[in-house]
Length: 144
Image 1 (spheres, one colour):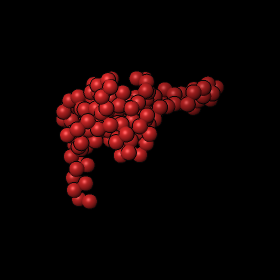
Image 2: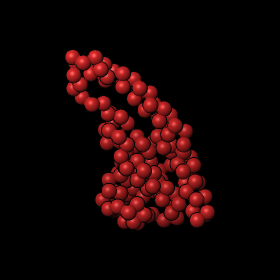
Image 3: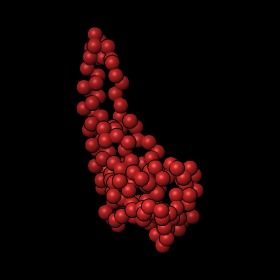
Image 4: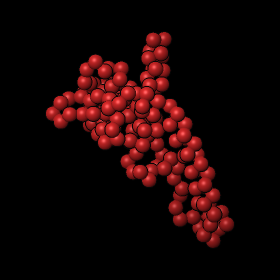
């Protein structure tokens, strides 16, 4: 499955939680910033909570970061919002014709290339912290 918008929304949520850290911000507030439904935010927030990136309290509105942004990488966020651990960046079409030389070999050939590309993407995401993302957001906001 290709990367869904859950990933960018999760980064958005974590960024807001840091920038607005003086209080517990609600899913309604976050939804207004993301421009989506609060239900979508609560679903993603639940994924982030299960991954240990945010903390929430039953019956209490809002969430807080579970650890410092320097300790959260984009790879952590990416993995937190994958619906299925077997989700891959690229999908290979199924059932190619085994009587065709291309059809017979395309899946193995693409699997090797796609795995290398996925590994490269994950390596890059692991080198970027949420602190770097928020620092860039703050810098851009100051320039506007």
